Amino acid sequence: MVNQWGIQKFRTALLFMTMLVVLAGCSSGNASNESDSASASGQDKVKKIIVGTGTQFPNVCFIDENGKLTGYDVELIREIDKRLPEYEFEFSTMEFKNLLLSLETKKIDLIAHQMEVNEERQAKFLFNDEAYNIFPNKIVVSEKNQDVKSIEDLKGKKLIVGATSNAAVLAEKWNAANGNAINIVYSGAGEDTNTQIKTGRVDATISTQFAIDYQNKVVDAQLKTVGEALSNSKVYFILNKDEEELKTKMDEALKSIKEDGTLSKLSTEWLGADYTVEE
Image 1 (cartoon, rainbow, N blue to C red):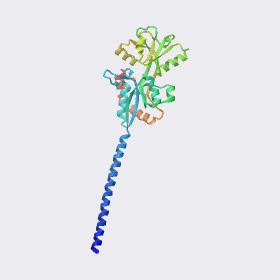
Image 2: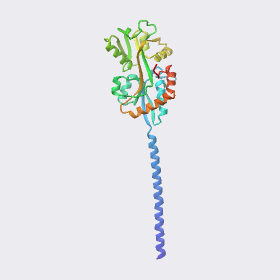
Image 3: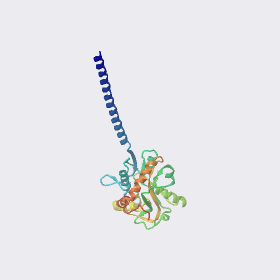
Image 4: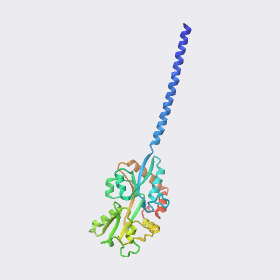
């Protein structure tokens, strides 16, 4: 009896130890699974940001001869992307006039298209704090035009601007203060502003010197800027009001890009001069 009882106790102890080993294995497996899950969760923390931009702004956002989307704003976003590993920036190209609506309806998360601040935009959207360019807007006419030397000389003439552009806002404000003396024409999809000025269908537009230099070089636009700058506005990225965290992160990246000289280099490479500092 004693031997049988001892054998029984031994079997019970052996079974208990086996259960402990199995449970320990299960616990280790669960820990491993939890670790894998945490790792996967860490990977999921990379947030995709859809950046709205255009394809027809010379040197800023355009398709090059190799079919690649590039330009100052595009390459700046790519540089920011490198410095913010918690985000992945992806471009969505569209006509300029559709950018603000796409942001408002959250089809995109931010706009990179040399956007200037105005009251209407501020009421709806969020601008980042760090300007990345200073945008001098001037009246642009044909090189042959000797009559128009400033915006004052456009009274009774036609000025073409892009719908929803800051150039349109500038023209409309000037017109409102001057008896609507200028006939403002809004460019439609696919319209060639250069051709319209060349052929005399319109008299002028509003743009900046680096864009005109590019047009003259690439397509022989035969344009020139005249008069004083209508505005010398700083330009920013535009986001939705609820993107405060993204705004803060982008400003941090922009500060470092400015401080190490990268922003100045990008401006000189794409715009022909350093437009990141005020004169």
